[in-house]
Every structure is written in C-alpha cells, then in structure tokens.
Length: 324
Image (cartoon, rainbow, N blue to C red; front, side, top):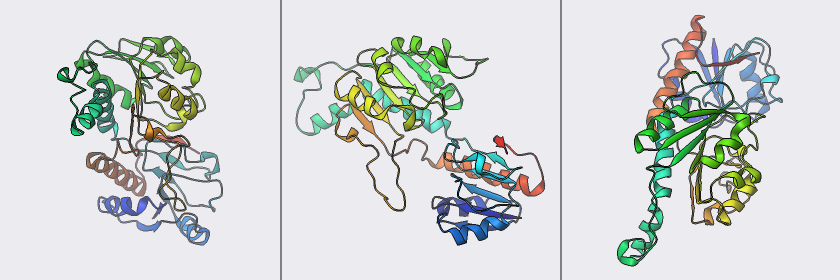
C-alpha cells in the first residue's frame, strides 16, 4: 500500500506520523499539491491520502481507500470530487487546549489584564485603586453561551462551571446529556439565548446553516459589553459586522483565533482580515494557535498513524466523517 501526504503543512507532520506506524506502507510527501505532474503520479498509486484539502481539480486517484484529514474540520475538502468508495476521516485531540484558550482569554478580557499590564509598564497606576481607574470585571455570576455543544463545547463548559459561570448552549442536534449546561437551545432558537449571555463562545463546525450565523442583527441582540470568543471558523461570523460592533463599543471585547484569510505559498504573511482588528484595544488576536500544543500533536499523530495501520490491515477505521 502507498500513503501520499498532500500539501506543504504535511512536511512537518509526515515524519512524526510515519515514526508511529506499526505497518510498512510506501510513503510520499507531495508538499506542493499544485504541481500537477507530481500530484498525478502520487495519486495514481495512492491507497491512502493524508492532508487538509481536496480540490475538484485533483487528478484521478483510482486506488484511494482512505482520505485522512489531519484537522477536525473537513470544510476545505470537496467530498463530491472524491472517487467512489473513499472513507473520509478526521482527528480530534484539540478540545483540551482550546477550552483552556477560551478560559484564558475570557479571564484576560474580563479582568482587563492587558490594559493593566501595558499601562503599568508605561508607568501609570490608572488600572488600580491607587490610580482612580475603573474597576474591572470577574467571571463569577456571569452567563456564558456556547454555540456548538460538541467535544470542544463540552470541555469549555466543564472548565467554566467551576468559576461560578452559568452555562447555556445552542446546538444543531439534540443533546442527551448536557451537564453542566443549564439549557441547550436548538440552533434555530439562538436568538433566545444570545440576550442572556455575557460571553459568547463559537465552537460550531462550519456548515451551510452556520456560515454567517453571527451577523449585525445578532450582535444587536447581545448584552451591551458582551464578549465574543471565536475558536471555530472565521466564516461563521460576519467579518464587517464584528469589526463594527467592536469598534463602536457594542461588544466589550473579543478573542479571535480563526480568520477569514490564511497564509498561502504565494502570500505567506497576509493580514488575516480586510479590517484592522489588530488596531482595536479590546481585541485579543492570535494566529489560529489555540490547538498548537505538543499534546494536541501527539494525540493527532497517534490517531492518524493508527488509522493508516487499520486501513493497511483491513480493520475498521475511527473518526469517520463520510464515505463516498
């Protein structure tokens, strides 16, 4: 059997996955998946492909059995362009650090941490009692609303509840065991949840019903001064409406780890948005790094290698997303 690792991101991933294999398939790394000749040759012989995207223009892959995504979201994969009989799988293992990121940024924003640090470094006591500044907030007694109550949403809820936070959620499908969430709203009833929330956490997958879900109308439903934390996909939020809500003080702040623009080989250092979020003092901007921990890598590489081994041995796969 042959495994093809597709895309420039697999250059760092492939050696660590291969080192964990207990079987011995042939392997090839096609870092430039726009190199039509190299890609065609690799896919002509590949039984397994590992990557984060699959495009309609990809050459035929007549032997392909498994398309293993090395991320959770498969929204960059055109599943309709795959040959029949391919099983698509993803990975997880990122829930714990993302939940920690949510709590870290919620605390930093609520407590005005960066304002306190930067002004005090500059020689001012304005953020404290001695300087006569404005008192900052605390999470105790606040309400957090989690949009998308899957693996990430549950980990966020488990960490938020011990801080004395009331937790609500909205989800596309019914949830049997929602603890410690007080109530799970159906996603079409999101408008009923938003006005109750001091913190809104977006943890939903990108899908037709979630694209553009949080727009100007829904920002207007939120509490004045509410916080927004997005660790899901940028496209779930209306980019212009979010910038306006933060700039105009409708929202108290935001933590944004997922974006509308990402690096490409042609543009390796793009601004992540059409709007200068980085200039707003009430926004924490990070480069999609909430999952970028060694723990996440270890868990994911082990699962990818495990699925490759299962496919080679003809055993059932884990984390199946779809079969074409």
